[in-house]
Image (cartoon, rainbow, N blue to C red; front, top):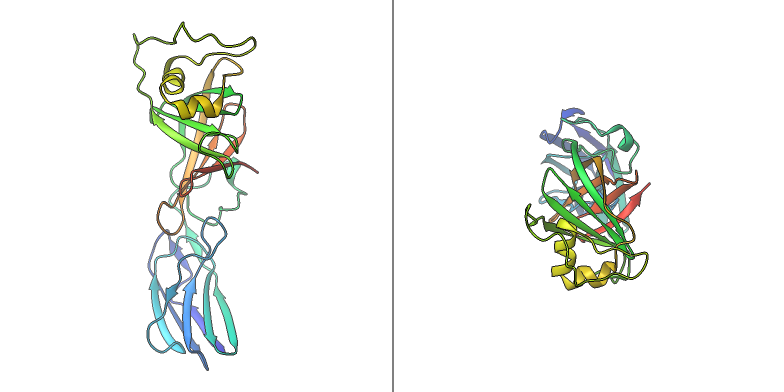
Length: 243
């Protein structure tokens, strides 16, 4: 069904325009696609006009690129491999990640704080002044699996660091400062996380994000202060450990 499928060049810069051309026979429809960050086909570029002789202009962020021709008897797919030169390289610890075929954003190195809770943990990032609450599955808003929520750090020096009326059980802690402010003022956070199981710690960390297809398509890798790498998907606020 597919006689040829070519690109005008295969060595390109990140998001550079590529012209694809193909020849086929017997097809009634055609589509061009590649994989998104969830290893699912990206939104197809459906071809208008003759599906057996056409061209399409795309700005790919991943390779390979696939052409699928279809008719009543079935479908056939051909592939073009592109060598995409990214502006930024992946952090070495992420070089083998499942999304390494995509171009990442700039790596971010920052100071952070972290605290463990009965049902999850919190991370504060100095560069964004952001507190992210990571719930284990089944707690807080995460009925279908682990998820996260982010909050602006509204704690200011001189504010009360804790509430003396809140007395944790033995072996547990009331979070303080920014973590404590979020925990005390948001019932979902407090009920979802439970008590802190240790005092907060601090240190240096890094993160690196990339974009996939569609809306809400930002993904992020974050190294926490325990050395774990957390993969965060913003389209559904889900997280998991990598690898």
